[in-house]
Image (cartoon, rainbow, N blue to C red; front, side):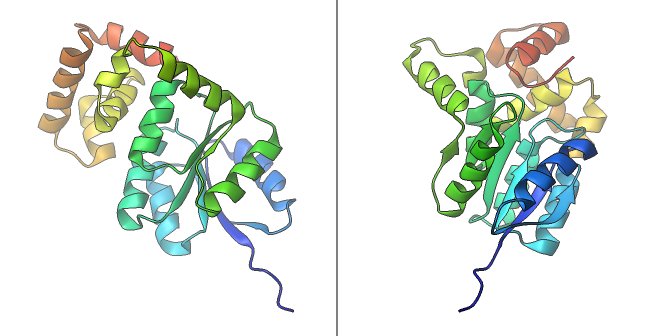
Length: 215
């Protein structure tokens, strides 16, 4: 009888120690094989094109363009791609933005390793996977009649807010997202208009409290 084909995994995180640790966790499982690693959204997209993994496990918060941009680009290339977000943040706006971009599942890094393993098997099977804490956050959010400020923003606007709050200039954001400087400026204006905030300092506070970035 032929051996079952291993699930091939692309692991994306901008911290080498984190990648190394979770590579060991994943490859200790029967039927899992990490075939490539990447440390940025651009590198993740390039690695996906070369290796065509069965599943992409990626962090949202990375230098430059975030995992949201990687999700969008990978799904634009292959709308059947399985992408599992693995993040230290699990706030509802960020989770919803990830799914809007095309993620198949969302697991927090505070979860047990078994939760990550289980989620990979779920997304490969075509199911949506959530760690328990993320499921609870989304359930609570759905019961809240008050719309959060970030619910007014589109997925692209959330990504630009994240990069602005991370201290990137308009020119750097334009380069990261392959947009014109004018387009980024327009998004910047829209974010302020939709949130009702007037200063960049207020935008930074919003991004931090929503889990989009760390100071």
